[in-house]
Image (cartoon, rainbow over all chains, first blue to last red; front, side):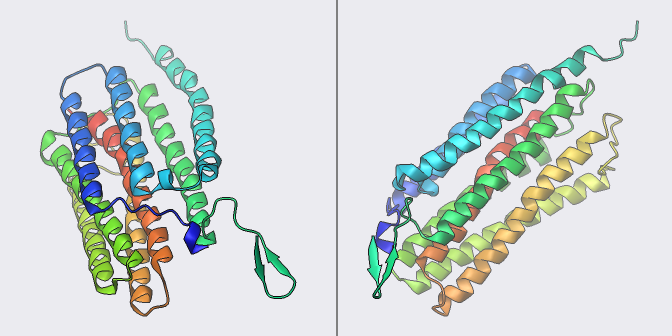
Length: 104
Length: 203
């Protein structure tokens, strides 16, 4: 079995290069936070960068890119499906905005 | 197919990985859904609260969060160093990398607890907002960061156990990789907690 394990032998130099890249993304996130964008726009961009960061970490640090495709296709679509289904609650949260008490 | 013994036929895993590695991947999948649920719940109450509090100044809170991010990302690389050394059967180097990872994990937890104590001193509680906004801010902040902190502490303990057993020759590189997968997952979760819970609540 050991011979079929993911090799993941990128070498420490590559890992440190990815580490620098991830830190740069964090820097961009902090920079965008102080651009005083609307919360919805800021949230959208922070989520995009968070997903990019997470994808890099999962593929390179967790070596998912070196595993058999069967593992990827067993794990990732299932997670994305659950995340997608959770999105169905957003309209209810947004509905609360219109139910707020307005003081005249 | 692998023939073992006279009449036993063992079929290879379709994923080509050891059971413990598949187990930790399944755990990570379920834990990812747990964190996603709690982050969605936070997003729900945040959107639904008209006067949501944004209390975090750049210094000390956001700056502290950036340092914590740096520490956790660095600990992921040291964990990879441990796995690379374990694959080469370099025991001393592997233990050194594992020790560095644990040290960074403890440092992360210490900074986190210091942040909590500062907020508690300011009057923040699970259901109390000293700024007069929704009390749910404290509930969501302490729940999300607390759950993550619990994972960090559990990870440090797990790495310690693997380090001791690896040193005694009772665990191999596969165990180091497995605990490493868990540790990287803790890092991945923080990649969402920091922007959503800290940056989205920056003044």
